[in-house]
Amino acid sequence: MRQFVVLGHDAPTTPEFSLDDLPGTGRLDVLCRCVTAAFVLSHAIREDVRAWLVLADEFTVRFEGSELRHLQPDERSTAALVREALERRGEAIGHEAVESTPGISLSRRGFEAVLEAIAGEEAGGGAVEAGTILALQEDATPVIEREPPADPAFVLADHREFTARERRLLAEHADARVRLGPEALHADHAIAVAHNWLDTGGFARY
Image (cartoon, rainbow, N blue to C red; front, side, top):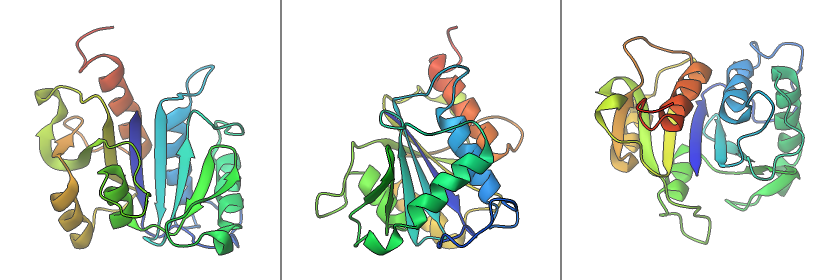
């Protein structure tokens, strides 16, 4: 299982937003492009992927590749799926998720709770399959210096840097800090490069 955790620092937490101005909606366009990069192949969906969109450290929308049915490769339709999930926010109790459409669910999880779930530390049955947590940061170790883990969980931020609190949480939970190349990449491009690193066994085979 490959996992991607994307922090939407200014992302909406209510469904009252326009699909015609995604950049002005807490840069929801960035998060939607990340979802596309995480799942969409030329003529297929990556089924062995899970993506977590952490919205303003208040809600999390989770996408399960093996169950997705309505994901299209454009920002607007993905934003509509996020909005549909937020319309069910009143039914999300604690960390118990509510499914909005096949493969997409919403929970009242912030960043710390998502990290605990991935690390298998979350109480109350909320943990998922444990993954090797890799924080994507510009000042970190080149990813080519390590072997690709079997079940990686990449953590990255949207258009903003990690906050001091987020860095502290990553220091506590992440197994490693890595960078994907010599240049800073947009979040969705970073996900595509991370997939390629895994698809090629660390850039070793094609």
